Amino acid sequence: MLLKTRQVGDPVLRKQAQLLSAEQLKSAKIQSLIDFMIETLRDNPGVGLAAPQVGESLAIIIIEDLAKYHKKVSRKVLTDQKRKPFSLQIIVNPTLKTVSKSNSYYFEGCLSVDGYRAIVSRQSEIVLTGIDRKGMPIEVKANGWKARILQHEIDHLAGIIYTDKMIPQSFMTEKAFSKNWTDKVEKDLLEFRY
Ligand code: ZN
Image (cartoon, rainbow, N blue to C red; front, side, top):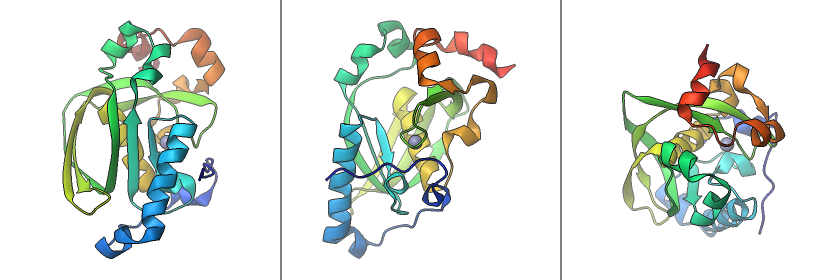
């Protein structure tokens, strides 16, 4: 079942998401929610989705970056972004464990801020801990684009939207982004910092 993606302005996107107990996670309701989130993410399509984005204030994120999504992005940009395909990952009750000292700057979009993009600074490398959909502990190490997606999704669980962290001058429509910025690499984007 496809779920409706909530848009910025919906109060659920500003709430602190609730952690799930082992029992809650096992329930048919939550297991179905996870399945529906996967369907919804792939339908859009997107690379990450947090439960509050479908109206559930729960600490669940899912991420997936498929090779077919990369066809519209130039090799140059994919390399610069350290963006490589990765398969579906479901992380419940995630915690950002350690963070790197270096940051990277790229455009982000969000299914809950439909039609816009802006540059956001993110940690280049992260480590996350949490549990999988069966309740087993997991640790996820990520760098580059995957690290960016994870930080964006974890922010949703704290009621934070990328526009809270963006470089304001870089905020633009999807159309303007496609027209002017798709082929730019990080060093071209740094001008927005000033
Ligand atoms: Zn988002």
